[in-house]
Structures are given as structure tokens and as C-alpha cells.
Length: 443
Image (cartoon, rainbow, N blue to C red; front, side, top):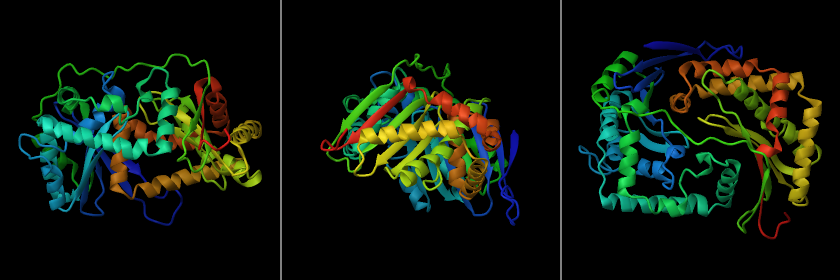
């Protein structure tokens, strides 16, 4: 057992009493990791199971199987009828859901603290004893295809993001959409789902995160009772994924769709992720994203493009670094109606070039660090946010020590380090630049 004490108060010099979230870590004999986050302010608990498997771990030609299986887990088990899981959570005054990412799949319930054992009993049941009929598979396959129609095919922005991701990664499965390519998702079978389930849904591939009004020893006792008897998957190896070759040429996309209301230019650069024990590069990129694209009124891009030159209605930067493999750093500009996409891209490039020449003001940098400290503290007020922060990081390969170290790493970043990170990441050979507009728009 390991105990971490995270101080989340008085960081800003506020006149409030300090709060502390105590984090306790266990591991069952079958390999399941358990993280307990104590918060006794309300008699509520969040119970989350995270599997270290996502869409980037799917077999070739089976895109969408991770998300498809997420849906199927709400069908029956040897002890529960189809739909009984969520109905039981609701009947006990709680709510539940699930989500799939490139690197993990997670299932969660938020209930009264005295209902925790019931959640564990049901979640442990479906970890190893899922049952699905051919009719279940046909029904849910149609559901995910309709979901793709509604959330992707009917949304030009989602289609454009799908195309840019496919261009950014030359070899890595992050190029494949989480929901799957339609022609592959519609061919998924019951056998595909069971094969994926039996291999990856196992205690030695799972993390249990329990946050709220709980006692760690009681959580461990309940986990040993319900999850402890589950058999691990034998021979489960660490993730083996194709990696990116050297990227030597910028890729450019022109996406036209009559449903695009606001044209925009976006550029995504391949960027390093947060690595276990080595998050320094990621911390610098996180600070760079906040400097360039944090608050629209005070960020570098917002000030230069929205207020000074007034060529944009929106301009920002973003960094996606919580991932197992290389993430991305992005720039975006949505021009005013009298500015073409070519002019917008030129203005964006000029703003970045000026930034590399001018650097960052000390006062601006300290203000951003203060904002990050404040945002961190406010986020601690929600146990579900806490559970999700820890679960996502652990399921992406980070450790508790990495998670605890992250805020201080951000605060320790220097201006010189941020500027060097900018010079390193802004390599057009490792980037995709995309224009999105309606056909009648220039560009």
C-alpha cells in the first residue's frame, strides 16, 4: 500500500483553510491496480474501472471494435439481464456511463457511498462474464453506425478532424478514428467482440479508481471480495504498436463541405507525449499552448490576430499530450469574413514568427502560471474530475508519482524552455495544415 498526500489549498495564498486529498494505492494478487481518493465532504462515491486498451490497440481491419465492445458491455452477463446494470444504478439513485479513447476504455458510476459494494459486484460480473446474443450484436452494431452518422458524418468539423488525424500519423493507429471507419465497423461480428473482450478485459489490464466518501481499507476489502477472484489474462504482453517513421514532408489538406459555416485553418504538429518519469518536454509544450492560445484576450495569438490586426474571430493553440505515444500540438485561426484562408494562414505564420522573435514577458508568464494553479485547485472540488484525472493518466502509462509531480513541473518551466520547445515543435515537415470551408469560400 502506498499513500500520497496532495495539498490543494493555500497554493494561491488564499485566506482559506488547506484541504488535502489523500491518495491510496493497492494492487490485488491478480494484478488489478486500485487507487482510492478520499473526499469526505459529501456521502457520494465515484467508482471507475479503466482498461488499458483503446482503439489504437485494435487488430488491423477491425476499427471500432473497442467502442463497439463498450456498448456491448451494457448487455447481459451470466447474472444480469441486458440493460439490468444501468437500471440498477438508476434505481439506486445513481448514474453511469462509459467512454472509449485511443488508449483506454472506462466505465463509471456515481452513487451514494453506501452503494459502493453493489457497483463493484456488478462491474466485476461484467469484467469476465459478459454474454451477448447475435441479436444483441446486430442491434448495437446498428447503434454505433447511427452514432457515427450523427456525430461524425453529419458534422463537417468531425469529418475534417478525422481526415487531418489520418494525415498526421503515417503509420501509427492514432490515424484511425475511435468510432471506426464505417466500412470496417459495419462488418464487426460477435466473434470479433468476444475475442477482443477475452484478451483485454481482465483484472491485470484494469485500474479501479474509487473517489469520494470512502475508507481505503474498506475499499480494499470490497475489491478483494469482488474483483480478487477474477482470473487474469495469461501472457498479456505490454502494448506493441506500430510507431512513426521520420516525417520528412508537410501534408496539406483542402476540405470543402457546404455545411461549414465558419471557414478556418488548422495546423497540427506531431509532438512528444507525457512519458513515465520524463514529463519535462510535455510540461514545456503545455505552457507553450497556454501562452499562445489560453485566454483569447491575453494570449499571444488572440492578442495579435483577434485584437491588433483584427484578421480573426478566433485564434488559439492546443496541446494533446496525455497519450501512450506521440501526441500533437495545434494552431487554429478562424478569419473574419473579408479575410481569405490563405491570408489567415499567412497572418498566423507571421504571428508565430513574431512570437519567436519577441519571446514571452515575465509578467505574462507568471500570470499564466497563476491561472494554472487556480484551475488546478478549482478542479479538485469535483470527485468525478479527480477520479478521471487519475484514471486517464494511469491508463495512459503514467504512475502516481508522475501525476503528483505534474503541477510542480508546470510551475518549474522557464521562459527559455518554452521558447526552445516552440522552436523544436514548429517543424513543418512534421505537420498537417488543413483548410476547411464551404465550396463557395476561397481556399
